[in-house]
Length: 180
Image 1: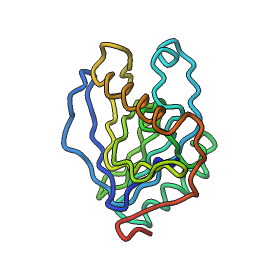
Image 2: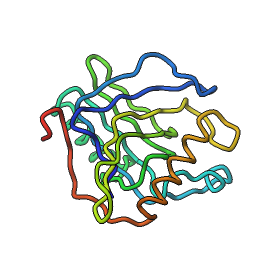
Image 3: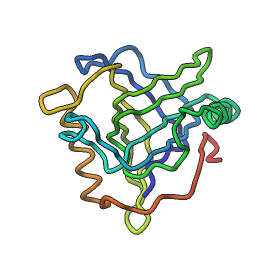
């Protein structure tokens, strides 16, 4: 199973604490998504886990060089996420978002995200191309009755039902507008 970036890029939309979009989306043509098995620890995370594995990193840039620099910086960060391919990671917690788009170079940590895009292949090698990511405000919570909960919970359940909890990881890939 692969939860990968699409060669057309990805848009990032930030949301406020009330679940409303905050500002215009940010678009980057080069993306790398990494993940690992979910490790719910708090009562909230246990009650509303999301996907079977969580994105640990969403790296987005407007050039391959900038994306490579983000990934190089993370490899040298002893507290950075492991650069492991994502699986069923559409509904995630504790995500790091690294962006270098235009003059914006920003890192956000410990965010709840909802990634979406088309399912482009089914088992035995299922794949979702992520084209849009919702990033919740710092300190946002996710539980029944909270804004975006139904999307967070429903998307995770749909992918688990469709693909299972432990699909094989895809080969490592970084994609950009040319598909490279």
